[in-house]
Image (cartoon, rainbow, N blue to C red; front, side):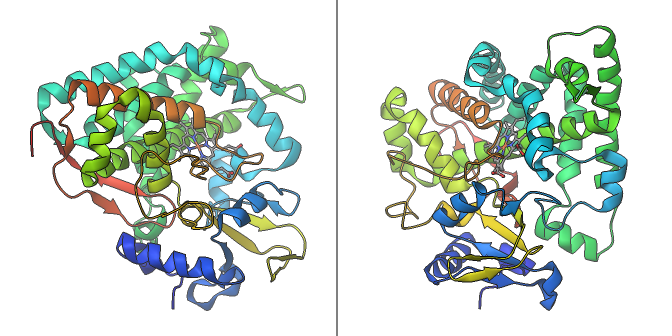
Length: 407
Ligand code: HEM
């Protein structure tokens, strides 16, 4: 019997997980899972595409407060580091989202297109000169790190440290996290968060004196109800943008090369006409890999939801990874098909007020990078097995070897 609350489920091979999720989608109502039988920590699992869209677009019934992650951040983390807008609803959320929203519109992203292209070109120079190495460290992690740091105004010499701290701050998430917690190895998470917060506070103080037209300057100048963001709010924003923008895109890029390698027919098709196929190929990489496996919502009041009864205060988990294989929406969903059209995947969420702020930016990064890679090193491929990190939160690959020569 499938148990989505059991960490070992998320360590099963990909095909076994996909089969189990497909079986859950056939059931006539959402199932309830309780880790170790503890009902208070349990959740209703939404696995169908339509259910996730409905829950994401009904914040009056499915709230983000008190938290969208399971387990939620400990209370002390919120006290010390502040809370982030992902865990907020209504006016509190919109006021904060508005501060950064303008930096992520298609028009603003088109202004930084040239700088994304330059970063991609430098990365591909490095790939071409090395010929082989770890794709995550050489390509997938540096691209989103440089892009978001450039938008924020973080100097180049600090970006290696940012990349290491972002990896450290998310290291304890998911199955591996659960196992480590059982082994009682705390600390790295806290140290990583602290370093990121100290960095933003020091750059924020400089930008207050000398605004530089970057995102940190916008953040330190912003006001909510006449008040400036305090140091904690600034830190919470900063780590949200870094963690949300780097880990996700990094995993999407790595899965992209993995999928093209595993499906040579699709890769040949893409190479036959990049202009025609690239945009759809990127959407299919996002659907197929679903970098964020799930997010949680919290039931506001008792309600009926597709033959199930949800009680106020209960948790509901939106499994994007399952929605993106829903046979009601995608024909032959287990097939990686770069010509799929339409492709209404939920990799960036089920629309609604929390829909991914960086969706346009992430797409732009993926398109620009794969164009540059496939034009300049068309033989690039994953030359060995990826090292997956089993997790019920993100679809993470820690390392994956690449080679640019024929296999
Ligand atoms: C392939 C890359 C990415 C994926 C798969 C992804 C996925 C997601 C998902 C699933 C959500 C939750 C949506 C919801 O709750 O309805 C989200 C929210 C968010 N994402 Fe992304 N994301 C990606 C890239 C980015 C980038 C580059 C940024 C920019 C810094 C970013 C910033 C955010 C923020 C700030 C939120 C919270 C929005 C809110 O609460 O209002 N993401 N993302």
